[in-house]
Length: 154
Image 1 (cartoon, rainbow, N blue to C red):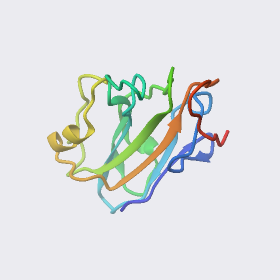
Image 2: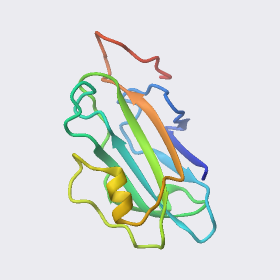
Image 3: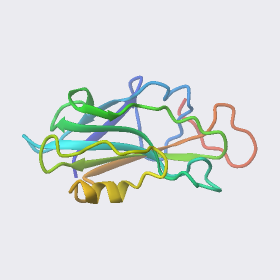
Image 4: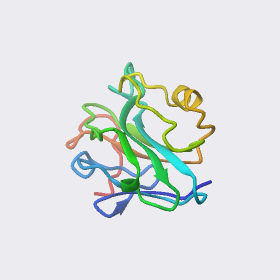
């Protein structure tokens, strides 16, 4: 396992924590550990788009960074897919960060679409192997009403 830290406005993402759209509007700061001279790919997806009851767009790709050097923050990588902040309209969505080790630098290329993205297939096509780290948080619309709610850290 490789250390992975994701922070929105200085607040760390912890597995299962609730975060509102206003907190995650801007792209997070990402810090990774890793093996010296290796490069990593970070994928951020919503497997519950457009809503958890009917995830017909799953997975929705919100962000992709590649060529992140080990023991650096994400700003040293290349943004292949620009950050799009999650804005769920109904239900509680899981927002997942998955980190992969690359075979070499400049070996991962941008996908054609954001909706119906398949993280596992993408990893196979780019010879990324199994994930080396993962994190997720829960997100629902700003003024979620009705149904189940998460307890927010906001």
